[in-house]
Image (spheres, rainbow, N blue to C red):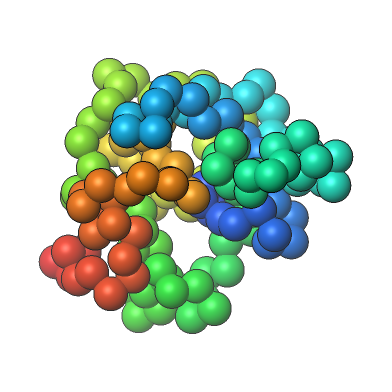
Length: 148
């Protein structure tokens, strides 16, 4: 594991330290991300490129993991990301091997859930404009599907 700051692979583009690490493609009904060779900072220029959309609708955005109750998905007693747990439990596997990823070494999901998270990651879109019931359940911090 790296000694760098752990990276959350699903932050809002306005978060300090936000970086685009993948491009959202596929369709509205079935989004699919393609990973960049390297993560790039979310700058005013990048924001202008995606306008009028939020960059998190066009890119997967990573940023420093709060690893605290500042994040609704953080489980302080277990020191784990519940969003990563719910993603592994509720989302289907969509690839047979982990895709190349610029943030993997420092990714909280990878370091916590391993390959299981990476096999589901290509379908995750932070700002999904047409989420299905599974996506809504996975993203809902009140969902206790990760309690066990």
